[in-house]
Image (cartoon, rainbow, N blue to C red; front, side):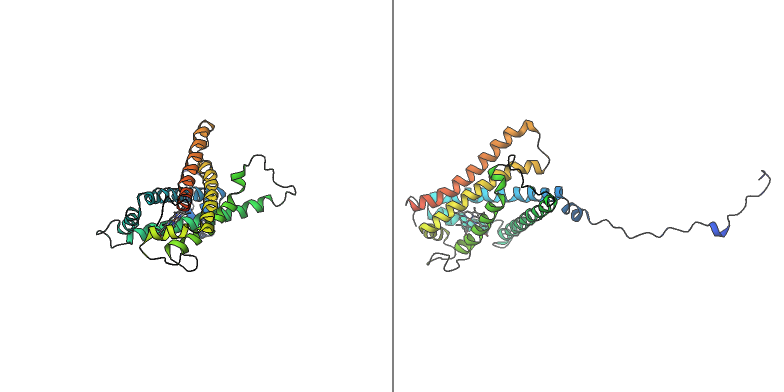
Length: 255
Ligand code: HEM
């Protein structure tokens, strides 16, 4: 083709047809994250931190028991009155409860899902897992978790819902101090509370240690601090909680 020749028009048969756009196969970010082991670990860690905050605040709040019935019942009433009159009575408590229930459900869901993933990944290997690297707390997370769940169902029926025959015979709504002391004066219930809170301590120890790993914060330089934090947190919460049934049984706290 010389410079004087006009440019040939594109023949119609080679005209570029627009590509048909395929529907996107990508799922929403959180769904994709949820489907990975890393995503599930993040969910475990974040909900775990929320639950740790709750158990710590609950144990500290329960220390009011040592100040007597008036202080303890006043504290129980205060929880229902948070942000009144900006919000009607108990609304803020309900928002906290909803957050807590959501954290609890996602925590258990992620744990079950990770366990299923691990089982599938380990299925081809015939030999049993080598437990040398995993300590007692790590290996028993599922069992301590189940004990805590069973304890929680009992505990709510006992003190929050007043469900007979789990709750003490004269359980009365609004009389938190009387309800808890009457309940823990029963020897069997006190023993159950002690066992459940030892399980909680073991679970908290491993959970508060491994949450840093799950969030990718596992520099060996911080391992000592992580161990102090995990031990301190677990022992503190378990000691506060175990003190209540023991002191009630000893008659130091009496209704
Ligand atoms: C010895 C240890 C414990 C004692 C003495 C205790 C005491 C109480 C009491 C008195 C209430 C009722 C409060 C009220 O009516 O205002 C309560 C509620 C509750 N406790 Fe505990 N608790 C203990 C351990 C735990 C643990 C370890 C957990 C969690 C694993 C837990 C979770 C709850 C929950 C979710 C509620 C209901 C809160 C609400 O919806 O208002 N407690 N506890």
